[in-house]
Length: 115
Length: 464
Image 1 (cartoon, rainbow over the protein chains, first blue to last red):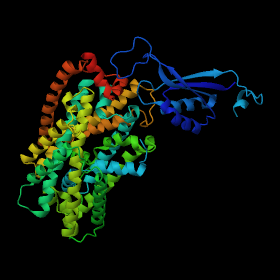
Image 2 (cartoon, rainbow over the protein chains, first blue to last red; image 1 turned 45 degrees about the horizontal axis):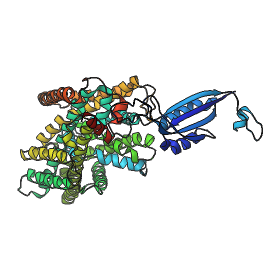
Image 3 (cartoon, chains in turn orange, brown; image 1 turned 180 degrees about the vertical axis):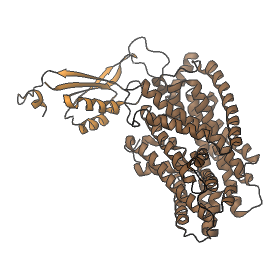
Image 4 (cartoon, rainbow over the protein chains, first blue to last red; image 1 turned 45 degrees about the vertical axis):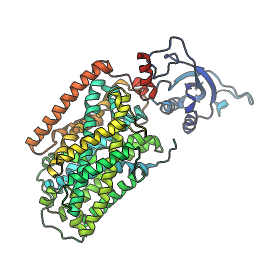
């Protein structure tokens, strides 16, 4: 199987820009969910002098896409550049292999299910 | 924010921001000493500044949308001591001196045409006083027409330069050799002077947010602005060598008006006085306002005293406005009108500017090593080679700040004393106020966080 899953957690303000940039590199679909969460800073706002002791979950957007392996690198580069502001909270990208994809309507599997 | 400015607007804004009328003083001086040989000097200075512009674009891509600009990059790159020394102190001192020279050009321009019998400094001081009041009232009298004025100035100079180059002015041409430089090294001696013609491309960065496709248009706009300015100045130099005697050109405190008169007679002088007077007022006005904002921005990141953040009822940062206004008044009142003293002031000031450019180029190299994988929407090509060439080139221009060794030494002595004073301030400020090691860089995410108004407020609250 030559497919990978890219998961992105970022702030919701970036979504529309990311959407159009990914379309340009050949991504054909994505799933978006509203989420809450925090990273290593435990949800501390970047301007605060001390880090939260307890985790504070902040509103985020979770984006999931399945792409062919050969565009993973290009897609990740695009995502990095679109999400980058240099501020804490720009987000994280997770890339993992996919063992199969099945289109329920037709029963097609693997790459065919994405076309 | 609506992204509405295209590449053309980016270029137009860049050109408008880079050219000031005091540049014409350097141009006249350069042309009077080297003739068309000064073109080689300008090409070298422009090329080095293009490389620096690319470095600025990369720094902006790495740390976008910062108001403090070069200071914040340096804070994250080299720590508070170097930042205060070169960017806060040096850059602000330089802005004060450059603004002062620009003011002096106003009085000189009026007297060179109208011969009023009133000392030039009176006009300069009167203008500064009016602009102080306007800025304190929070009225930006030139905000709307500033760019138009700058374009008219550039357009006028371009047309005059072309008319002069083609030899189709109404005035009489002078008979003198066009080139006074025998060898290429002869042209190096005025590199410092030529540098002044191309500074200020970093002012484009704050408007990056409102430029369409900023990744491409910001660096391209900066580079094309510099190239257009170079072309305009090449035409002017050629025109000046044909229409103005070198002796007169070198002695003139407003060479653009001298050239305008020689080229087109009385009409030329009126044309230039009108355009340049408007340009001077608008430049000094915006410099005064941006100086106060720059001080406030640096106070926000704890590098200057917080009184620079104080606003009057009209919302103006009055300490910064009064500070620069006072310096401009005093410096002009003590007699800053001859071309020699103005050129000397320019040379003293631009060393600081050049040092800040050297540091910016080094910052690019530091960040390349420290954050090799950080996404950069713009990256200077060929690895660290071009920023290193730009840093060395700018350092070479500092060394060639004047063709007169005695004057060069004097410039270095004055700048050295100012740097020592700034160094003392920097050490004390770092130790007692910033309370951070002098040379340890502040983490980039913290520098980015300083941009928030809440950063200082949250720390004050904690202290209380």
